Each structure stands twice: as C-alpha cells, then as structure tokens.
Image (tube, rainbow, N blue to C red; front, side, top):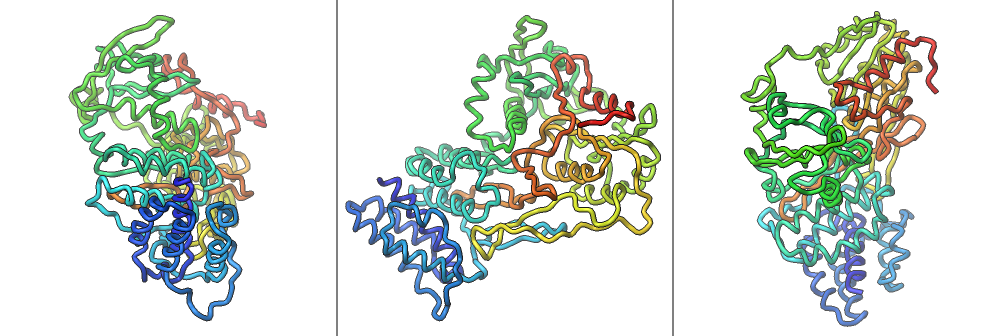
Length: 535
C-alpha cells in the first residue's frame, strides 16, 4: 500500500509541476513541497491522513489563475485509473489539467540547434551537488523527477522495456532503501536502461570514479550469434605475445564465464537494439585499470587456450605508440576501387571537402558509402543534394511540446532542394552499416536511401537517432536520452529498430579470422552484377 501511495504522490506532484500555473512560474519551491510531503505519506496511518497529505500538497501549489476558462486539455491516463485518489481529489486535479493553457515553465523549455531540430531541456532543476548520498526523501525526489520528465517529455515512452507506470512502482522501494552512495547512483543506470535508448547514459562523480584510470585491451571484440569474438587487434605485438588472434572466441574473462558476466551487466546498460547493447558491453568488459592483468580463456579451432594480457594507456598501444603497430599513412577517406567503384568513408573526410570529393566519385558507375562510424551530422543533407532533385524529404521528426505536457508534434519540413542545374548522380549506390551506425550516421543512411538506386548492406543499426538532452538529479547526477523522434517520411520509426536493411550480412568468426570484411565484400559482389535486382 505504501508503494502505491508514494507512486500516487509522484504522479500528482508531477502533474502540478507541469500543469499548475503557479508552480510552472516558479512561485513555489516545488522540490521542498515534495520533500515535506513524503514523510507525511510514509507516516499516514489511515486513508484520511494520506488524502490530507495530498490535499496539503495541492494547496501548496496555490490557487489557479482567475478567469481562465477550460481549455479541455487531455488528462493523463493515470488520472482516471489511480486507485489511491478519492473522487474529490481526482476532480480537483482534472480541473487543473482542463484549465491549463500553454505557458512557459521554469522547469522545461526547448533548445534550438543550428540544424533546426529542437529537444526539450530542463533548466530549472536543482542538482543538490552536495548530496552525493541524499536522504530518502531526496532519493525519491530524483526518481519522481526523472519519471515525470519521461512521462511528459520523452517522445518514445510507449516503447520502454516495461509499462512506465509499473516502472515507477517497482523502483520506489529500491530508491527508498538504497544502502549507500554507489548503490544510489547505480539505480539510475538501471532505471535509465528501462528506456531502451542507445543515447541514454548516466554520469556522476561517483560513477565516473569507478572507471577513472581505465585503459584499453590490445584488441576489440564483437558479439556474434551469442559469442564474444576478437575482431580487431590494436597492437599486433602485444596480441601475438599473448597468443590472441582474430576470430578467437572469448569464453571466460578473469575466470568467469563471459555469458554469466554479460547477463549480470545487461540491466545496467540502456540500448535501443540488441546489437547496440552487446557493442556497449564489449567496450565495457575490455576496459580496466591500466597495468591490471586480464585473464582470458579463448576457443580456437575447437580447443581452449588460457592466456593473459594487460590494460594499456591508449597512447601506448595506438599506432606509433610504445607498444602499438608501426605508424602508417592514414587510410584514405575515399578512393576509386578496381572496376570503377567509388568508396567513401564519411567519417574520414571533412565536411568542407565533401562537394569536391563527390564531384569526382560521381564519375563512377557505383559509389559505396561506408557508414559504419560516426560522420559530421551535416553530411546527409549535403550528399542528398548530389543524388536527387527538388525538395525530397528523406526523414521527418517529431518534437515534444514544452508548453503542452505529453504532446508530440511533427515538425515542419525544412529539406533544402538541390542547387539549380545541379549535376545529379545517375549511378548505383551501396550503403554499409552495422551496430556502430548510430544517430547522425543513421540519418545519413536515410538520406542515401531516399535515392532510388540505393541498396543497404549490413546488419541492424543502433536505433537511436535525434538530438540528445539531459536531466540533472540529486547528487549532481546527469541522465541523457533522446529528445527528438526521427522517422522515415512515411512514419516508419528507426528508434529501437534501426534503418532498413536490404541485404543482411553478419560477419562470421571464420571471416574475421581470415581478415575479411564480409559486409564490404557483399557490397562489392552486388556492385559487380549490374543487372541484379535486390528485393
């Protein structure tokens, strides 16, 4: 019963925060009202005492503005369903909502970037930086603050891991009873993971200290068909000394079964797609304090190999570093491959160079765009002007309304046409992508896919596109998440799905062991078959 009552307090407090004109103006210290209310609710021995605590909170908000007629604003669904509300209190709150008129709010606003998209920001929130391990009332304040921001200003609430109302109820006991500083901060990692959003992250002095002084292993890994596979050697000499090879499957880390470790960590990582989740786990597991040994059990050709390596400063194992591979000329960002196939890695060229490069690549019958990395966010629109005429829209976005809680609206089209008499490309386009393709990279893929002769090759992308925003919580904890919803022009979502893939290709351990790029190989195979139609 207490958890249900506290959940009701959280919802009522959030409703008044965003709908009541006095609270929205900042005329009331609304955090303090909650901090006073929580112990009263926890001590309420009767239903009447509980209702009195809610009535007092409503009274603290002050009177509604006189003369405001009903605007018939839609009420949140929970307001009709909350069993802890009496009919009188439900009616009082319904009137607050119905008489709400869009207005500025000290707790929520909008930030317009130079590229038009606008995400919500939350400027009026206190960080309580001195309370790294706050009292229970402030811990619950943090939970309630984040829950209500997602409830009213997150464009993807409908796709969270669980029903958002249930998330609130299930986390109240944990936040109320968090035994120490680290446990409190880590609760936000678990709570943020409920969003299933690859843009989500949690940062605080306590959490950051956990990874301070961390270095890198001498290799990278992928997660393929349930196996953690070495897919890139950062330092050939260090890897050779430890007998670590491309294609090796990692079965144990420091004596622990890899899958057991990954299972324990997954609840703390927020990711839009399975591939993005495993990508982030790979990066986490292969980091560690510089100088600390890492014991590995590898599976190779049916036999187990036990070996050790260490974590290194990146400067020591990068090319040219003390233990790194010899420095080599940087790989070109673009080139013309055998057979007149243009190849471009957008992340490896400067935005200012792009027009000149494309003019040269457009002379080839095929161009491959390798978008398995993060490019300049402006490149999608720039490349689009070389591919199709007119005001072709390759994506659309929806923004939350800072002045109307719970409202998400489609933003106006701002696509720019190709310059007059532009020499548009007439050849075929192939796009390469995988779990590293995220956010601006996914937007670039969507721009390329609007061209009628594009084929997309690879695996599911990260499924997180659109501007990020952040919310500060007690203990000076920041939680980041996606603030703008990006879709295809027909409304097909990419969040939690990734972009459309025409030809699925997933690397294999055998291919990795042989040093092959199987996604690029497939694109080249298709590029050399001009009459092939991909369904």
